[in-house]
Length: 260
Image: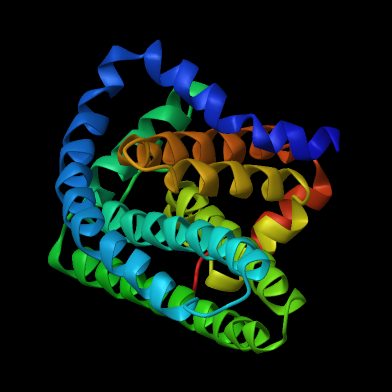
């Protein structure tokens, strides 16, 4: 439980760190502006459509079951919109977030692995890796999310199980997004990134659930992405500092290294 709560605390530590580092604000202000535009479009279109779909789906249900399922579906709707906002926000703000993460790691650890020069070959390789990363996250979402939807066919408990599965999946994807800048600079494979989340349970679970909750809050989720990126870099730096002199940690880093 202590480890879970420790992971839960990283976004709050990130807020304190950002507030005390005015030089980093420029790498946050522009992505927030982009998120504002994306969030405005999402919440003025998909939110109303989602409420209408929920009302149509639950028409004629017994009142006590209706309110329970309605609450779960509304939670799922906000989580889904937050997920979409993060998708767009991370992609649109990636140049700023990458630099933010580099500067944070340099200040926290004294050294940082910087992104390679922006040559045509490096840009093409980075674009390919980014597309591959997004595709693998999509495949992971489909592989778990589609069977979870079928759980809704089970009366009563099925919707509860589907919601729990969806939240766990959302927390995992959120961890992948917010841990990615320092891991991607080291060219970690997708499976290694998932392994990073698994190895640092339950702290990574607390981190993912807290960040998922933040990106699901309307309006606040406009600033939640840079907070999550900062928190993910803090998490990585703490882990890297703990294992830097550990033989097991060095071996693990070697196995999780760049694609060949």
